Image (cartoon, rainbow, N blue to C red; front, side):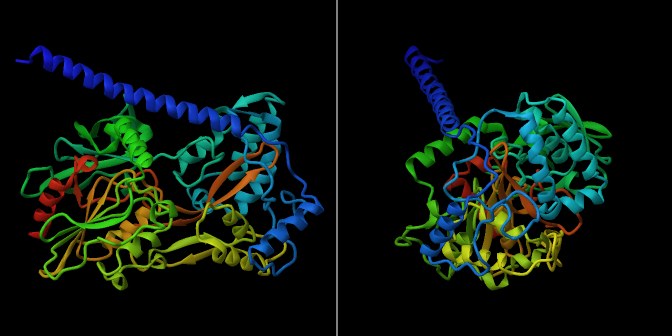
Length: 530
């Protein structure tokens, strides 16, 4: 029986929890309002003055950068003829507009910039066309919609509804037009209540029904192992992943309807948001390597950026010992960035010479004259070295008219080749991932998975590694910044959907987002016996 004091204590705990949640929500709202006020639409910029061109050249020179082909900026950055210095703007120009509305006539004018840019540089242009997408008709329909609205101010949802159509046809979690309207759609994982006895044809989620493409392996039900805390062995399981926009998983039709049990962060979205706010506020999520058992080592790799890695001391980190049996590489909630940060942490623990390189995965990267200008806007922490590389690329000769060109690197390894086949004396590697592991985090997962001693556990990753190489620019008339993928990869080698579906796991962990040290030791014990 519950006593009065326990009831009151429970009530106060509930009040505190909900108070914290509401406080966080209010804080997020205030931050959003402050950002909106600070980034009202800037005046239209389409002309760069001679003084601005000279000032930008001087700024780059003070940074020690060398301009090898004249001035950095051109007078008309958003008009043809398109060159390697098109789209570049002065660093002194104000930030992007973030108004919730946009003038239809201004966006209509911006399509005259967006279309030639996407034609020459969008990494998904050819793949969409190959699957039946009509680019000319799409842009034409978009222009008609905007022209019908005259100079009216319309919502971003209305203005960019055609982008929703494109991204529904070809999922692309790197492309976002504009940046202040999120269209990214990460994966969610659900376990089937029974093994299918027939091919699966439909998903029911969020009280809606979605067909499963029989020709797309990324949409199919997978077989894997399942492990829950306290168990001493793996069980067999069937699971499926699909975009979070579908809604809460309910059932999958495989002849009969089979119930779905969602796993991972999609069940705990509010908790996950609050936890991330708490961690960021205390600045506690840093890379580290520590021993959590006699023969079990834990390596934490947070988001790959300078704010998490620079200035971190290795003092006190665990050192490799002959008896180490399991290394857990925790990639949960890693949003990506520069995977080199993570590789540096793992030096001495993993033989990186045996891991696949980026080139081994295979890719198609656009290489028109606009590539370097679009990469210039990437929020990168590589400093002057990377900037000089881009300036050197701008100085290369390009054909007149800046035609579309693509550099193709053949694949020498695919994720389908991943097998957990360790030798008896090998130290096992557990790659711990969840639906928040994205971009370079997924690349790190592929690198680890190329080693036979690696087992991938958790839930499917976010799914933002098929359309790759983000490039940034601005729509000049509306002042809206945008991002497009400049390349495409095929992680599995069979053209299956990965963006929005993620990379598969060997072992599904229903408690992946709550897995603590005790559970990790238990998981390591099961893996060590295999």
